[in-house]
Every structure is written in structure tokens, then in C-alpha cells.
Length: 158
View 1 (cartoon, rainbow, N blue to C red):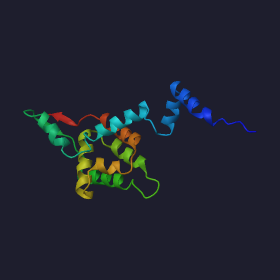
View 2: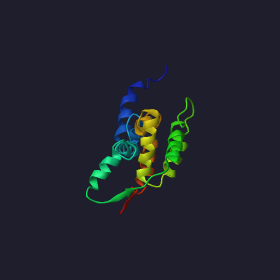
View 3: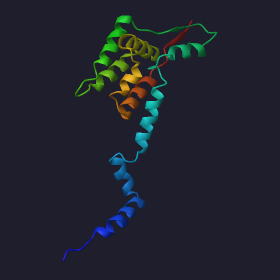
View 4: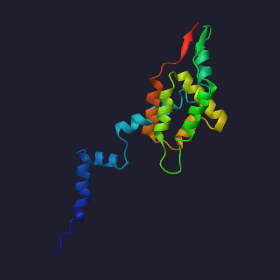
């Protein structure tokens, strides 16, 4: 006669959850979000308010009202090249995320990231942040955030 262990499954499962093993297992399967996942989501949300969005430069200029300054820029050809590189990173199979990261790293200032984002919008009729959301997960968006936030604003006082 076989032993019936099914009556122990729920109590043992409950004990695992109580002692913390269950949380790690649930995080592993994506049922519960861990601290790193929560931090990545927060960065991804903040990225939406960064230089990747239209209107960033205007808000920056409004905050500098009354002061004379110059906004750093790339040539239009360089901005178009980076926008194209980012657009081509999305594929039907095997996206090339590193192309996006390298394009963002090629920008020396946040103002240049915004110039690339404006060029991207003019060329493809979708803002850069929304486009990245179509194929980047939260950790990849967080990496973009880290790259952009590490850059200086790109404003020089006159």
C-alpha cells in the first residue's frame, strides 16, 4: 500500500513560505518582484521623464530662465546616424540591445541624448522612450537610465 503524502504538501509549502524559502522561489519564477526588479522598474519609469522624452529641453530651458546658456549638440548627420542605429536594434528575432547602449554612450551630454530622441521622433514618428518599451525589459530600461543619468546635462553658461 502506497503512502499518501499529498496531505503534507500544503503545510510544508506554508512552512517554506514562512521561513523565506518560498519568497526566493516565487521571485525566481517572477510571481513576486524582488528588490532588484522593483529598483529596475523605478529607473525605467524615471527614464520616461528623462532626456529620451520630447519636451525635456523646453523644461530645462524654463528652469534656466533669465540666464544665458548654450545647449551642447551633435551635427544633424551624427544624430540621424545614432537614431538609425537605435531603430535598427529591434529585430524580429534576437534584438541587438548593445546597439542602443553604445548609441547612448556615444552621447557626451543629456542634451545630445535629447537631440537624438528628437531626431528619432521626427524620422520614425514615435518617441524614443516608447520605442524602447516595445522590446526592452525593465532591467534593460534601467541600464539606459544609468547611462543617461551619468551624463552631464550639456549646458554651458555664456
